[in-house]
Amino acid sequence: MKDNPNHRLFGMKFADVYPLYVKKAERKNRTKTEVDQIIFWLTGYDKAGLQQQINEGHSFETFFDQAPAFNPNSALIKGVVCGVRVEEIGNLLMKKIRYLDKLIDELAKGKAMEKILRQ
Image: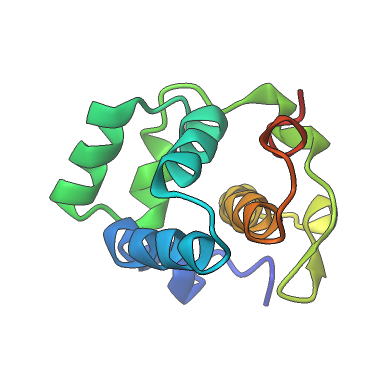
């Protein structure tokens, strides 16, 4: 399942999931700005680029395919998301999606931003 090249998650609209990331963070007294900072760090999008992706309703696949500069330090992201170790995921798109999930989880758990961004 984790390496399925046609996983239903790939076709989901990023714009549908983004508010859930923000809501998860805000429930734990974190902010939308911090969620955006994580997305900017991971993907290279800026505020305008992120908003364009949301407005155009792109899928996760397109969102990551069009990412200006996927962060090379993303390889430092380790751990378990949805019961799967991110470093063991073979499908690159699924790995990128789970990297983002993991970073949002860390934010919601109260981890310092410097550690989340692997600085």
